[in-house]
Image (cartoon, rainbow, N blue to C red; front, side, top):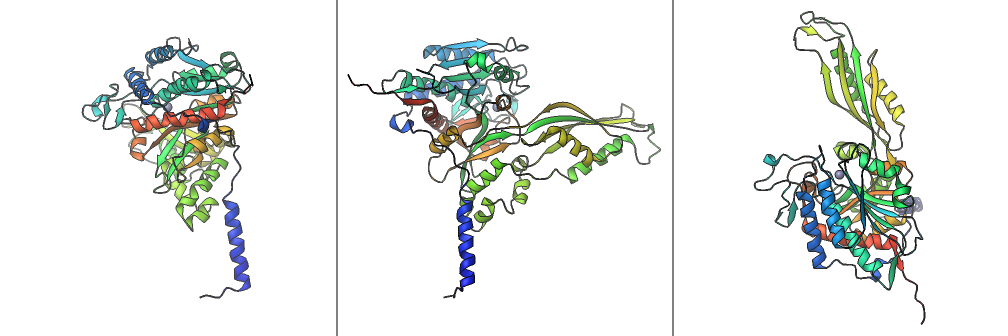
Length: 493
Ligand SMILES: [Zn+2]
């Protein structure tokens, strides 16, 4: 046995103390546990109704463009009517034929500010010929334990869960003698998310009018449960609490024109290509957002020692984070050329002008204008013109909220699954509401999926396991119960 002298012992002690410290993050408030006092498990008839609703929503082809979201709104309106839940449909300016549907469960007394379950009804188009044999993107087929179709994950599966949640919450809270709602609960289905998000923008601009008050919390898309995301064998519930902003920049370089046979350097197209190469070779620096640090800290234990020791402290993680496109995109600003233009029909004429459209994404706590100036430095092209075509800053919510506490209580199936806050690489409708000071806006689809299923979002053969759809409903209802429900006071006769 090795002898340990006093100095070694002190070092080991210091190390153990610092390891213990690193395993505690900011504390998350825990809401009262209302759900566990009730039997909220959906019945098999509820599960069948949920599957049927999703199938009908998939069959309502809402490919954007053009959207035609009225088809899905008609399905939702009929569903809520059948369950005696009041709805209204409204239109945003410029989207007159593309309705927004709002369903409402009224609190017995409004002790707290409203909660909103948000979702978009449009989907991206699907090329039917490229899908698996016999599976139609707008067929809504049940096969091999899945419901198949465009929107199954993004995000008609979630819309169906949110709609069905209202039915269950109504049953357990509004028609109950023992429990009641203490905040209004709204379901909001918006058009146009896959394009400009004008539907949700209108709702965010008119919250007080539409909901009677500014909501305190919103659940939307943006995150999901993922098997084997960072550490093999670990299931993570990645709750999106922050999103990068978009900055679309047109880069123009001008120069001499001339005959293509006179080949020397310094023409507009060459200088643009050289600048874009410099940009690729000197990426923006990695910056770890507080949410990313918390994600590392929470995910670390599954990595085992000594890896977990370093990971929980965000030490030596930059290489691993930047090696994956998804994680790389949540730790730094990025710009990618999505359109290039120079020259005309003649191959022998040197073009006097070359342009590139850059899709830049900026971290939630960074100033987009500062990013544009840093872009100029990285391109280092003399006389370059940068025109900002669109600028939308990133957005974030703190995760230390009772709603996040309810996620921690009800999303994991066991102690091995962890709930982590993440920064999303792209933006969703959540950004509109964070921009209007709704305190807690989180993106989480309550389904655990694998990487293969994740790839079907905006891709081929989109599908959702029916077992996860049903489990997701149970999770969602329990979460809502804890943050929106309460016990009715008991009075003696
Ligand atoms: Zn979506």
